[in-house]
Amino acid sequence: MEESARPEAGRSEKNSAANLYDWIESLVTAVVACILIFLFLFRVVNVDGTSMVPTLEDSDKIVISRLAGNYEYGDIVVLTKTAYSDESIVKRVIATGGQTIDIDFERGVVYVDGRALDEPYIAEKTSRSLDFSGPVMVPEGCVFCMGDNRNRSTDSRRSVIGMIDKRCILGKVVLRLWPVTKLGTVR
Image (cartoon, helix red, strand yellow):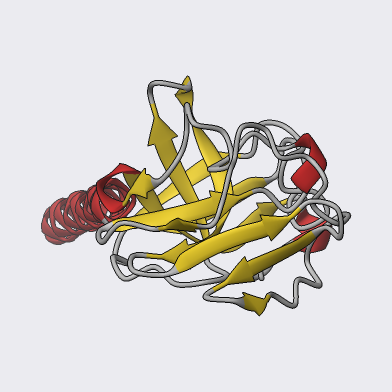
């Protein structure tokens, strides 16, 4: 009777080893898939500073999509501008290639193609000009970006940043991860 129990024990050990191998293989595949997705399609970015208040706060964690390539008014983007900073910066697209931007700093109104923008997302009206002098046409392949906290934001109004070549945009903000109480899409 002991001899017949022995082969079943061997099969049980083989099944356990096969199950363990399957679990490890599945785990490794899932990890590799996540790495590839976040390497090529999405990226988690930390917001540094208050230039996007009230929309985004300092230390918020956001997810950007690298798939977007056609940016338009209102999109929140993460970009690099090494002439200004080695760190990535978060701003809102205000105008795109071929559009004309002008700002009336006395009234605090931003105009695109002669029309005043309705900007419910800003912290306060735009009174800081930095070194902007308009009207200015945005070149094709570029965007004009500003922070939502207009009077505490260094953005396309400053010549060191200026027009943003779309190739400098890392991606479009699609989701806020942190704080958890504000988890969701960002507008």
